[in-house]
Image (cartoon, rainbow, N blue to C red):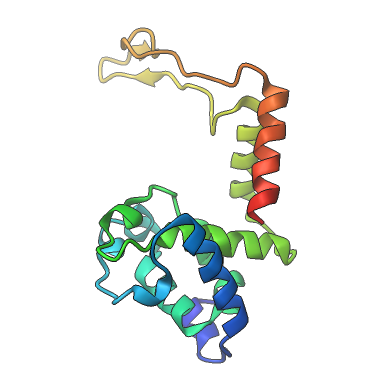
Length: 175
């Protein structure tokens, strides 16, 4: 079910909107109420190009207080966290931060996290990266590694257990 379908029946959650805006005001200068829907955030959104995420509509729904509708939608999980929306916004509103807050609400509310998202998180926890370095095949059908291409080695956490503990502490604090 799309967000549009959910919002036609939605009731504004004013207190939840205030709580999200309070959290966001600690991270950035402005809150969602300053968005004037210019859609510059959406014009650079990588997820919009592929998955139809429209950050300016997410901000508009937050302004209306339709939090549950977004938390119950899978669209919040499509954000690629590229932060282009934050860079492009003339009002310094960060839809990506709103999406993080909505994801935290979804998890805190016991919503099921999509499987692919979970596998990425497991990979970050286990090896410190989304995925290990991949070799590539050139048009000559030769396989090249990062070393072959003159790229520096990927840095990984020195102490994986300490990295995991720190990451989990941050995750718990953000919820």
